[in-house]
Length: 333
Image 1 (spheres, one colour):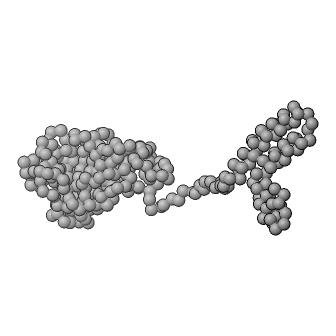
Image 2 (cartoon, helix red, strand yellow; image 1 turned 180 degrees about the vertical axis):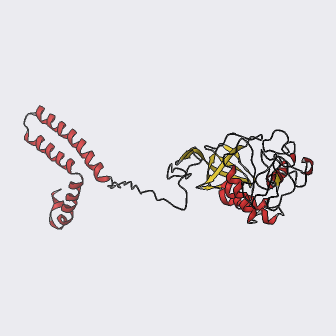
Image 3 (spheres, one colour; image 1 turned 135 degrees about the horizontal axis):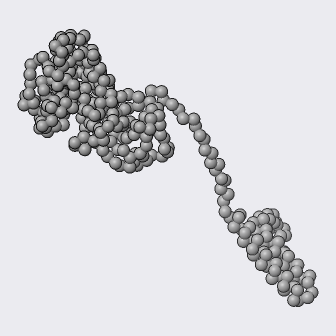
């Protein structure tokens, strides 16, 4: 053993011993203390007891030391949460903008109401059926069909007849306005129609979609009592669109917006200005008379009725029957 630390060998053995001593420092100290105890303590009982205790301590601290030396050090990465102030996009309405639930993508749309109006329920548009009908996810996969209140667009999906004039354009416009987006749905009086579709006013941000479709000439204003909360807006929008020949009013040979003189029940003739909403009307129409048999569908009859200024109080060509609810030719498909 002494020969390892003599001559030229010492230049290798001493550094190696130092490294091993550092690596197994507690063990080296334990062996040294055990050796000293064995040599210096005369009482054999005390000597062996001391050596045993030193051995146990050396085993414990030595194994801990070796484990610590052999395990690579992994610095803890500080996790800092940076809360950024919400950026408001002023091109997107905050009225019906959905509340951000999480930064991670969610597999389903979460039911919620508009932050600025608790009467408006938010829904995710899953399909645009036609110009006035969409399918939405009300939350957690609850898919419902929604029919826009107070308006009618030309038909495109009815299998019983051909696509009506400006129907494809109306469907494309509706898809442009709401397709794939989050819309706000507002109820009036009725929950559903006879087909089980939800009856709703629809918003995309601050844009009132029902009114926008009428104002741009993609839809007629159609009153269906008792859901007439915004019907005056739709009527005014239609009159302006007709005057400007927008959309279907310029493309489909629809009647002129100029009102014809009518006679009230008292016999007074009134003229009314072009496109105004205050024209007095009676319960009879002075133009050519039409019957329900002259139309192939109720929607076609309703469009004619509306274009002639028909309403619950103005039964144009007596198409509204005797119930005076503003819905015409209800026996038609």
